Figure 1 (cartoon, rainbow, N blue to C red):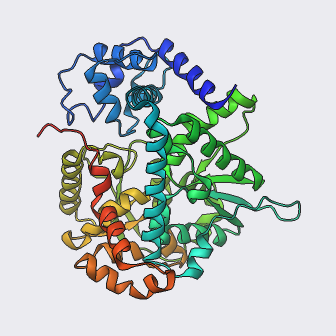
Figure 2: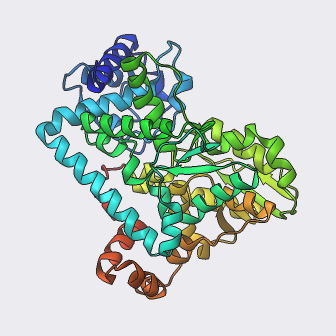
Length: 438
Protein backbone atom coordinates (compact mmCIF):
# COMPACT_ATOMS: atom_id res chain seq x y z
CA UNK A 1 0.00 0.00 0.00
CA UNK A 2 1.35 3.43 -0.96
CA UNK A 3 0.53 6.78 0.62
CA UNK A 4 -2.39 7.75 -1.61
CA UNK A 5 -3.94 4.29 -1.20
CA UNK A 6 -3.65 4.68 2.56
CA UNK A 7 -5.31 8.11 2.39
CA UNK A 8 -8.10 6.79 0.17
CA UNK A 9 -8.70 3.90 2.58
CA UNK A 10 -9.06 6.27 5.51
CA UNK A 11 -11.30 8.58 3.50
CA UNK A 12 -13.72 5.79 2.70
CA UNK A 13 -13.64 4.55 6.30
CA UNK A 14 -14.52 7.98 7.72
CA UNK A 15 -17.21 8.52 5.08
CA UNK A 16 -18.80 5.19 6.01
CA UNK A 17 -18.64 5.96 9.73
CA UNK A 18 -20.36 9.35 9.43
CA UNK A 19 -24.12 9.12 10.10
CA UNK A 20 -24.75 12.63 8.76
CA UNK A 21 -26.38 13.97 11.92
CA UNK A 22 -24.88 17.43 11.37
CA UNK A 23 -23.91 18.13 14.99
CA UNK A 24 -20.37 19.01 13.94
CA UNK A 25 -21.68 21.61 11.51
CA UNK A 26 -23.94 23.13 14.15
CA UNK A 27 -21.01 24.04 16.43
CA UNK A 28 -18.68 25.29 13.68
CA UNK A 29 -17.71 28.97 14.19
CA UNK A 30 -17.19 29.44 10.45
CA UNK A 31 -20.71 28.71 9.21
CA UNK A 32 -22.02 32.19 10.06
CA UNK A 33 -19.23 34.24 8.45
CA UNK A 34 -19.52 32.24 5.20
CA UNK A 35 -23.30 32.58 5.02
CA UNK A 36 -24.38 29.07 6.00
CA UNK A 37 -26.19 29.81 9.27
CA UNK A 38 -29.51 28.72 7.77
CA UNK A 39 -28.16 25.70 5.92
CA UNK A 40 -29.58 22.26 6.75
CA UNK A 41 -26.82 20.50 8.76
CA UNK A 42 -27.80 17.05 7.47
CA UNK A 43 -27.78 18.27 3.89
CA UNK A 44 -24.34 19.81 4.36
CA UNK A 45 -22.95 16.59 5.86
CA UNK A 46 -24.52 14.58 3.08
CA UNK A 47 -22.60 16.74 0.63
CA UNK A 48 -19.39 16.32 2.61
CA UNK A 49 -19.66 12.53 2.48
CA UNK A 50 -20.50 12.65 -1.23
CA UNK A 51 -17.37 14.72 -1.92
CA UNK A 52 -15.20 12.17 -0.13
CA UNK A 53 -16.77 9.38 -2.17
CA UNK A 54 -15.91 11.13 -5.42
CA UNK A 55 -19.11 13.05 -6.08
CA UNK A 56 -19.77 16.75 -6.54
CA UNK A 57 -21.35 17.20 -3.11
CA UNK A 58 -23.34 20.42 -2.97
CA UNK A 59 -22.48 24.12 -2.89
CA UNK A 60 -22.86 24.39 0.88
CA UNK A 61 -20.58 21.41 1.50
CA UNK A 62 -17.93 22.75 -0.87
CA UNK A 63 -18.09 26.17 0.76
CA UNK A 64 -17.89 24.81 4.29
CA UNK A 65 -15.00 22.46 3.53
CA UNK A 66 -12.97 25.25 1.91
CA UNK A 67 -13.49 27.54 4.92
CA UNK A 68 -12.42 25.11 7.67
CA UNK A 69 -10.14 26.93 10.12
CA UNK A 70 -9.33 23.79 12.15
CA UNK A 71 -10.89 25.18 15.32
CA UNK A 72 -11.58 21.60 16.41
CA UNK A 73 -14.83 22.42 18.22
CA UNK A 74 -16.53 19.82 16.02
CA UNK A 75 -14.57 16.98 17.59
CA UNK A 76 -16.44 17.11 20.89
CA UNK A 77 -19.79 17.32 19.09
CA UNK A 78 -19.64 13.89 17.43
CA UNK A 79 -21.28 11.01 19.33
CA UNK A 80 -20.25 8.34 16.83
CA UNK A 81 -16.47 8.16 17.08
CA UNK A 82 -15.86 10.15 13.89
CA UNK A 83 -13.21 12.87 13.73
CA UNK A 84 -15.21 15.62 11.96
CA UNK A 85 -12.08 17.73 11.48
CA UNK A 86 -10.51 14.96 9.42
CA UNK A 87 -13.81 14.36 7.63
CA UNK A 88 -14.06 17.98 6.47
CA UNK A 89 -10.36 18.17 5.60
CA UNK A 90 -10.68 15.11 3.39
CA UNK A 91 -13.81 16.50 1.75
CA UNK A 92 -11.89 19.64 0.79
CA UNK A 93 -8.93 17.55 -0.40
CA UNK A 94 -11.24 15.46 -2.59
CA UNK A 95 -13.03 18.54 -3.90
CA UNK A 96 -9.79 20.31 -4.82
CA UNK A 97 -8.56 17.21 -6.66
CA UNK A 98 -11.88 16.94 -8.50
CA UNK A 99 -11.93 20.63 -9.36
CA UNK A 100 -8.29 21.19 -10.34
CA UNK A 101 -7.50 17.83 -11.94
CA UNK A 102 -4.07 17.69 -13.53
CA UNK A 103 -3.19 21.14 -12.15
CA UNK A 104 -2.90 19.95 -8.53
CA UNK A 105 0.80 19.13 -8.82
CA UNK A 106 1.62 22.49 -10.38
CA UNK A 107 -0.46 24.30 -7.77
CA UNK A 108 1.16 22.37 -4.94
CA UNK A 109 4.65 23.15 -6.21
CA UNK A 110 3.78 26.82 -6.61
CA UNK A 111 2.44 27.00 -3.06
CA UNK A 112 5.54 25.31 -1.64
CA UNK A 113 7.92 27.60 -3.56
CA UNK A 114 6.05 30.68 -2.36
CA UNK A 115 6.36 29.59 1.28
CA UNK A 116 10.05 28.76 0.90
CA UNK A 117 10.82 32.10 -0.78
CA UNK A 118 8.88 34.10 1.81
CA UNK A 119 10.64 32.28 4.65
CA UNK A 120 14.06 32.93 3.14
CA UNK A 121 13.42 36.62 2.56
CA UNK A 122 11.65 37.54 5.79
CA UNK A 123 14.06 35.64 8.04
CA UNK A 124 17.10 37.22 6.40
CA UNK A 125 15.74 40.70 7.02
CA UNK A 126 16.20 39.92 10.72
CA UNK A 127 19.28 37.80 11.39
CA UNK A 128 22.87 37.55 10.20
CA UNK A 129 24.49 34.58 8.50
CA UNK A 130 25.79 33.12 11.75
CA UNK A 131 22.28 33.06 13.22
CA UNK A 132 20.86 31.61 9.99
CA UNK A 133 23.40 28.81 10.30
CA UNK A 134 22.42 28.28 13.92
CA UNK A 135 18.76 27.95 12.91
CA UNK A 136 19.52 25.77 9.90
CA UNK A 137 18.05 22.26 10.19
CA UNK A 138 20.62 19.53 10.70
CA UNK A 139 19.84 16.57 8.44
CA UNK A 140 22.71 14.25 9.38
CA UNK A 141 21.44 11.11 11.13
CA UNK A 142 22.57 10.35 14.66
CA UNK A 143 25.55 8.16 15.46
CA UNK A 144 25.75 5.73 18.33
CA UNK A 145 28.02 8.16 20.14
CA UNK A 146 25.86 11.24 19.54
CA UNK A 147 22.11 11.09 19.95
CA UNK A 148 20.31 14.30 20.99
CA UNK A 149 17.83 14.45 23.83
CA UNK A 150 15.46 16.42 21.59
CA UNK A 151 14.75 16.35 17.87
CA UNK A 152 12.94 19.68 17.50
CA UNK A 153 10.78 19.80 14.37
CA UNK A 154 9.96 23.47 13.84
CA UNK A 155 8.15 23.38 10.49
CA UNK A 156 8.66 26.26 8.06
CA UNK A 157 7.07 29.59 8.90
CA UNK A 158 8.27 29.88 12.50
CA UNK A 159 11.60 30.81 10.91
CA UNK A 160 10.02 34.20 10.14
CA UNK A 161 10.03 34.84 13.89
CA UNK A 162 13.55 33.62 14.66
CA UNK A 163 13.48 34.86 18.25
CA UNK A 164 10.86 32.18 19.02
CA UNK A 165 13.08 29.37 17.75
CA UNK A 166 16.15 30.72 19.54
CA UNK A 167 14.23 31.04 22.81
CA UNK A 168 12.84 27.50 22.53
CA UNK A 169 16.32 26.06 22.02
CA UNK A 170 17.81 28.09 24.87
CA UNK A 171 14.99 27.05 27.22
CA UNK A 172 15.64 23.39 26.41
CA UNK A 173 19.36 23.89 26.93
CA UNK A 174 18.70 25.60 30.27
CA UNK A 175 16.84 22.42 31.24
CA UNK A 176 20.04 20.48 30.51
CA UNK A 177 18.77 18.99 27.23
CA UNK A 178 20.64 18.72 23.95
CA UNK A 179 18.62 19.68 20.91
CA UNK A 180 18.84 19.42 17.13
CA UNK A 181 16.56 21.40 14.81
CA UNK A 182 14.72 19.98 11.83
CA UNK A 183 12.23 21.58 9.46
CA UNK A 184 12.21 24.22 6.77
CA UNK A 185 11.95 23.46 3.08
CA UNK A 186 14.39 20.56 3.45
CA UNK A 187 12.04 18.70 5.81
CA UNK A 188 8.52 19.82 4.91
CA UNK A 189 5.43 18.19 6.41
CA UNK A 190 3.68 18.44 3.03
CA UNK A 191 0.72 20.50 4.19
CA UNK A 192 0.90 23.06 1.38
CA UNK A 193 0.94 20.39 -1.29
CA UNK A 194 -1.88 18.52 0.45
CA UNK A 195 -4.05 21.65 0.60
CA UNK A 196 -3.50 22.01 -3.14
CA UNK A 197 -4.75 18.45 -3.68
CA UNK A 198 -1.34 16.95 -4.48
CA UNK A 199 -1.46 13.99 -2.11
CA UNK A 200 1.35 12.18 -3.88
CA UNK A 201 3.94 14.93 -3.32
CA UNK A 202 2.57 15.69 0.16
CA UNK A 203 3.05 12.06 1.12
CA UNK A 204 6.62 11.95 -0.13
CA UNK A 205 7.47 15.17 1.70
CA UNK A 206 5.79 14.25 4.98
CA UNK A 207 7.18 10.72 5.09
CA UNK A 208 10.66 12.00 4.24
CA UNK A 209 10.43 14.52 7.09
CA UNK A 210 9.30 11.76 9.44
CA UNK A 211 12.28 9.66 8.33
CA UNK A 212 14.66 12.56 9.04
CA UNK A 213 13.16 13.04 12.50
CA UNK A 214 13.47 9.35 13.34
CA UNK A 215 17.04 9.24 12.01
CA UNK A 216 18.04 11.52 14.91
CA UNK A 217 17.17 8.70 17.35
CA UNK A 218 16.37 11.35 19.91
CA UNK A 219 14.86 10.55 23.27
CA UNK A 220 11.92 12.84 22.44
CA UNK A 221 10.60 14.27 19.17
CA UNK A 222 9.06 17.72 19.62
CA UNK A 223 7.05 19.93 17.29
CA UNK A 224 6.39 23.65 17.37
CA UNK A 225 3.98 24.38 14.54
CA UNK A 226 0.32 23.38 15.10
CA UNK A 227 -0.19 23.07 11.33
CA UNK A 228 2.63 20.53 11.12
CA UNK A 229 1.41 18.73 14.24
CA UNK A 230 -2.09 18.43 12.78
CA UNK A 231 -0.75 17.33 9.39
CA UNK A 232 1.27 14.57 11.05
CA UNK A 233 -1.54 13.51 13.40
CA UNK A 234 -4.33 13.54 10.82
CA UNK A 235 -2.55 12.58 7.61
CA UNK A 236 1.08 11.44 7.73
CA UNK A 237 1.24 9.20 10.81
CA UNK A 238 -2.03 7.30 10.21
CA UNK A 239 -0.97 6.63 6.61
CA UNK A 240 2.46 5.56 7.86
CA UNK A 241 0.81 3.08 10.24
CA UNK A 242 -1.25 1.57 7.42
CA UNK A 243 1.81 1.35 5.18
CA UNK A 244 4.23 -0.11 7.74
CA UNK A 245 2.17 -1.61 10.57
CA UNK A 246 4.19 0.50 13.00
CA UNK A 247 2.55 2.48 15.79
CA UNK A 248 5.60 3.95 17.53
CA UNK A 249 6.11 7.26 15.69
CA UNK A 250 4.87 10.59 16.99
CA UNK A 251 5.54 14.21 17.88
CA UNK A 252 4.89 16.04 21.16
CA UNK A 253 4.00 19.76 21.06
CA UNK A 254 6.70 21.94 22.62
CA UNK A 255 4.55 23.43 25.39
CA UNK A 256 3.05 20.06 26.30
CA UNK A 257 6.59 18.73 26.73
CA UNK A 258 7.53 21.66 28.97
CA UNK A 259 4.49 21.07 31.16
CA UNK A 260 5.31 17.37 31.48
CA UNK A 261 8.81 18.34 32.60
CA UNK A 262 7.92 21.10 35.04
CA UNK A 263 10.11 19.44 37.64
CA UNK A 264 13.13 20.43 35.53
CA UNK A 265 11.73 23.79 34.46
CA UNK A 266 10.22 25.12 37.69
CA UNK A 267 13.57 25.62 39.53
CA UNK A 268 14.72 27.82 36.64
CA UNK A 269 11.95 30.39 37.25
CA UNK A 270 14.16 32.65 39.33
CA UNK A 271 12.88 36.05 38.21
CA UNK A 272 9.52 37.49 39.22
CA UNK A 273 7.54 38.68 36.19
CA UNK A 274 5.06 41.32 37.31
CA UNK A 275 2.60 41.04 34.47
CA UNK A 276 -1.17 40.77 34.16
CA UNK A 277 -1.40 38.35 31.26
CA UNK A 278 -4.17 37.23 28.92
CA UNK A 279 -3.49 34.40 26.49
CA UNK A 280 -4.44 34.66 22.82
CA UNK A 281 -6.32 31.38 23.06
CA UNK A 282 -6.75 28.99 20.14
CA UNK A 283 -9.39 26.23 20.42
CA UNK A 284 -7.73 23.94 17.87
CA UNK A 285 -5.06 22.73 20.33
CA UNK A 286 -6.70 22.38 23.75
CA UNK A 287 -3.82 20.31 25.13
CA UNK A 288 -1.37 23.08 24.23
CA UNK A 289 -3.60 25.77 25.74
CA UNK A 290 -3.88 23.83 29.00
CA UNK A 291 -0.10 23.40 29.07
CA UNK A 292 0.50 27.12 28.46
CA UNK A 293 -1.92 28.10 31.23
CA UNK A 294 -0.16 25.76 33.64
CA UNK A 295 3.30 26.98 32.68
CA UNK A 296 2.43 30.65 33.08
CA UNK A 297 0.70 29.98 36.41
CA UNK A 298 3.98 28.55 37.72
CA UNK A 299 5.97 31.72 36.97
CA UNK A 300 6.30 34.01 40.02
CA UNK A 301 4.44 37.28 39.66
CA UNK A 302 2.23 36.31 36.72
CA UNK A 303 -1.49 37.05 37.07
CA UNK A 304 -3.52 35.19 34.45
CA UNK A 305 -6.70 36.79 33.10
CA UNK A 306 -9.20 34.94 30.92
CA UNK A 307 -10.92 36.99 28.21
CA UNK A 308 -14.45 35.77 27.59
CA UNK A 309 -14.51 36.31 23.81
CA UNK A 310 -15.26 34.03 20.82
CA UNK A 311 -12.37 31.93 19.58
CA UNK A 312 -11.76 30.29 16.22
CA UNK A 313 -8.93 28.88 14.16
CA UNK A 314 -5.90 26.71 14.72
CA UNK A 315 -3.92 29.94 14.33
CA UNK A 316 -4.95 33.46 13.40
CA UNK A 317 -3.63 32.88 9.89
CA UNK A 318 -6.22 30.12 9.42
CA UNK A 319 -8.87 32.83 9.38
CA UNK A 320 -7.35 34.59 6.36
CA UNK A 321 -10.05 33.00 4.24
CA UNK A 322 -12.58 35.19 6.10
CA UNK A 323 -10.72 38.49 6.70
CA UNK A 324 -13.73 40.42 8.01
CA UNK A 325 -14.46 37.71 10.58
CA UNK A 326 -10.80 37.62 11.61
CA UNK A 327 -10.76 41.38 12.06
CA UNK A 328 -13.93 41.32 14.17
CA UNK A 329 -12.50 38.65 16.48
CA UNK A 330 -9.26 40.59 16.88
CA UNK A 331 -11.13 43.82 17.66
CA UNK A 332 -13.29 42.06 20.24
CA UNK A 333 -10.26 40.50 21.90
CA UNK A 334 -8.36 43.81 22.02
CA UNK A 335 -11.36 45.61 23.50
CA UNK A 336 -11.83 42.92 26.16
CA UNK A 337 -8.10 43.02 26.95
CA UNK A 338 -8.19 46.79 27.41
CA UNK A 339 -11.23 46.56 29.70
CA UNK A 340 -9.50 43.89 31.76
CA UNK A 341 -6.49 46.14 32.26
CA UNK A 342 -3.95 43.57 31.17
CA UNK A 343 -0.30 44.47 30.70
CA UNK A 344 0.43 41.63 28.29
CA UNK A 345 -1.32 39.70 25.54
CA UNK A 346 0.61 36.45 25.11
CA UNK A 347 0.43 34.69 21.76
CA UNK A 348 0.95 30.94 21.68
CA UNK A 349 1.96 30.32 18.07
CA UNK A 350 4.10 32.09 15.49
CA UNK A 351 1.28 32.68 13.00
CA UNK A 352 -0.79 34.47 15.63
CA UNK A 353 2.24 36.43 16.78
CA UNK A 354 3.01 37.73 13.30
CA UNK A 355 -0.62 38.73 12.83
CA UNK A 356 -1.01 40.50 16.19
CA UNK A 357 2.33 42.04 17.19
CA UNK A 358 2.08 44.68 14.46
CA UNK A 359 -0.81 46.25 16.41
CA UNK A 360 1.20 46.84 19.59
CA UNK A 361 1.45 50.60 19.02
CA UNK A 362 -2.35 50.79 18.79
CA UNK A 363 -3.17 49.13 22.14
CA UNK A 364 -2.45 49.73 25.80
CA UNK A 365 -0.60 46.44 26.38
CA UNK A 366 2.43 44.64 25.03
CA UNK A 367 2.04 41.70 22.64
CA UNK A 368 4.65 39.00 23.20
CA UNK A 369 4.97 35.27 22.67
CA UNK A 370 4.64 32.87 25.59
CA UNK A 371 8.26 31.71 25.21
CA UNK A 372 9.40 35.30 25.80
CA UNK A 373 7.72 35.28 29.21
CA UNK A 374 9.16 31.86 30.08
CA UNK A 375 12.60 32.96 28.92
CA UNK A 376 12.40 36.21 30.89
CA UNK A 377 11.67 34.32 34.10
CA UNK A 378 14.70 32.11 33.47
CA UNK A 379 16.86 35.09 32.54
CA UNK A 380 16.95 34.48 28.76
CA UNK A 381 16.14 37.34 26.40
CA UNK A 382 16.16 37.40 22.59
CA UNK A 383 15.00 40.48 20.67
CA UNK A 384 11.77 40.13 18.69
CA UNK A 385 13.15 41.32 15.37
CA UNK A 386 9.94 40.51 13.49
CA UNK A 387 8.00 42.92 15.69
CA UNK A 388 10.66 45.53 15.00
CA UNK A 389 10.02 45.12 11.27
CA UNK A 390 6.25 45.12 11.73
CA UNK A 391 6.23 48.30 13.85
CA UNK A 392 8.35 50.35 11.48
CA UNK A 393 6.60 53.46 10.17
CA UNK A 394 6.77 52.10 6.62
CA UNK A 395 8.09 49.17 4.63
CA UNK A 396 10.87 51.41 3.31
CA UNK A 397 11.91 52.26 6.88
CA UNK A 398 11.95 48.56 7.76
CA UNK A 399 14.14 47.81 4.75
CA UNK A 400 16.45 50.71 5.59
CA UNK A 401 16.86 49.37 9.11
CA UNK A 402 17.77 45.98 7.61
CA UNK A 403 20.07 47.36 4.89
CA UNK A 404 23.21 45.76 6.30
CA UNK A 405 21.52 42.37 6.49
CA UNK A 406 20.27 42.69 2.91
CA UNK A 407 23.84 43.32 1.80
CA UNK A 408 25.21 40.46 3.91
CA UNK A 409 22.74 37.97 2.40
CA UNK A 410 23.01 39.35 -1.13
CA UNK A 411 19.33 40.32 -1.37
CA UNK A 412 17.89 43.21 -3.35
CA UNK A 413 15.57 45.72 -1.71
CA UNK A 414 12.88 45.15 -4.35
CA UNK A 415 12.54 41.40 -3.78
CA UNK A 416 12.69 41.86 -0.02
CA UNK A 417 10.01 44.58 -0.20
CA UNK A 418 7.58 42.29 -2.03
CA UNK A 419 8.10 39.48 0.46
CA UNK A 420 7.70 41.75 3.47
CA UNK A 421 4.54 43.43 2.17
CA UNK A 422 2.96 40.06 1.40
CA UNK A 423 3.81 38.76 4.87
CA UNK A 424 2.73 41.82 6.83
CA UNK A 425 -0.54 42.22 4.94
CA UNK A 426 -1.28 38.58 4.17
CA UNK A 427 -1.85 39.71 0.58
CA UNK A 428 -1.03 36.36 -1.01
CA UNK A 429 -3.46 34.47 1.21
CA UNK A 430 -6.22 37.04 0.98
CA UNK A 431 -6.38 36.58 -2.79
CA UNK A 432 -8.02 33.24 -2.02
CA UNK A 433 -10.53 34.64 0.45
CA UNK A 434 -14.13 33.56 0.04
CA UNK A 435 -17.07 35.92 0.10
CA UNK A 436 -18.22 36.77 3.60
CA UNK A 437 -21.55 37.88 4.95
CA UNK A 438 -21.18 41.47 6.16
